[in-house]
Image (cartoon, rainbow, N blue to C red; front, side):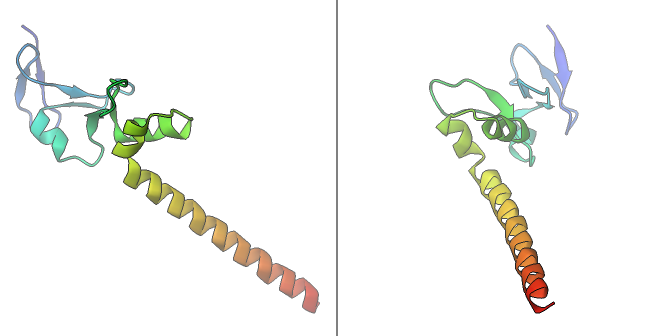
Length: 109
């Protein structure tokens, strides 16, 4: 029987009888179930019955950015998508304000 060690708590995990959580894409993880539930970049299985991807939040966000159209995957990282959109909107707003200031300055000159 093969054994692994949890990256977070160092618990020894038997591959045959313990669930070892690991991202299918980047390999992030190798955690016991308890530790995986408490990390920011958790590795989770998609809730969609047609999608069996087990990905960390960063890989799932990247795949959604690239156009992967799974509602279950998007639902798992919805908060991260909203944060990213809000940050991009703030940058756009800053740039628009800067453009308006420059245009006003050019009109005065």
